[in-house]
Length: 450
Picture 1 (tube, rainbow, N blue to C red):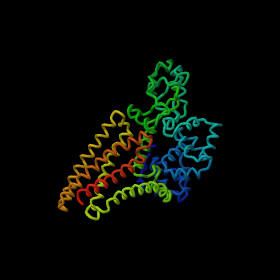
Picture 2: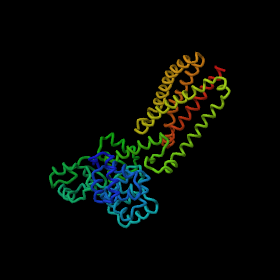
Picture 3: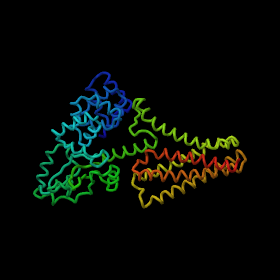
Picture 4: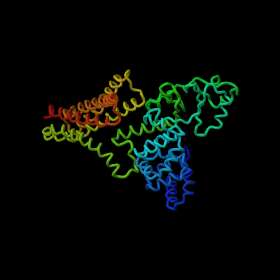
């Protein structure tokens, strides 16, 4: 859905609120038809629960599931709790298969069990098999609406069936399968129109594009789309059976979700944290990470506590401590960003990991030396103490060396341990640079300044 409001976003939100207040459903349907999915979701998120439901009910049934996927987690929970059973069933039945499965997976256990029970009795859209796939696999994000014909079928027969197919079951390519439903080729719709009517599809088709296993991780799916410059790729089961397709819009959603998760986790917040969430929900999600950070801060403070005597004798050290630790943290964040991005894009692998770690460590060291010289010069101009200037220069160089090394190694190690590198790398690396920075700086000061 690529519609855009014909007026400003602020005016759109105001008009929606106005028609909701006047309880004018006809005006509401006319208004929201002019908005794209993301704009409409942004307006729905801050609404009260009953207003969220009324706005969704004003949408065509086939569009409701799309909007549900754009809402915050809190809004999704609220709407699904308030929707009537018949409204939920209508939304799932009208939606594209991948959107319908996404809605089913959002339901609580009792509601999901009820829907699955109904699908076992009647499943015209083939949703039940899709629920068996992991949410972040090719099978979990694919859709089953596609044009699929046997290789032995004639061009004329395929044209007739295609003309009578439901609109949402027509894919960008026409897929040709053998007697076992294994993918053997594709035909572009234009070529199907130009082919001789009596010819078999096997004669008119092209070789099948590289297919995606149903178990492939969604990040790898995105990489395959990028490498093949594809707008649509088939998904196959264990025996090569064609079971669905993934389109470019599905991949865009995956990329947006993955990058959003990485940014949120680097900031130490839940990936589902949303600006429209209630305050207590926001607090409950952020507090655990803040407590973890509090623990790491206490650990860094305990390192400082080891050198109380030194600080009492050379009070000026207290002014430089946050600079040493802060510059190490900044350098570590730069390295983390580069390495985590490389891991996400598949650019970092066994052949170049050691070289990358070495390069990032050397870069950190050189940056540390440059900043150390600058800060040492400032310290000398301020206090006229050559020993203090050298201590600051060496401490900053060493700490930024550690920042480069830790920022490169920690995400790689976490990836090898099958832990999301974006989840806790920043906490570990910041703790490392704080503790090492304080220890090196105050340790050198103890040796040379007292």
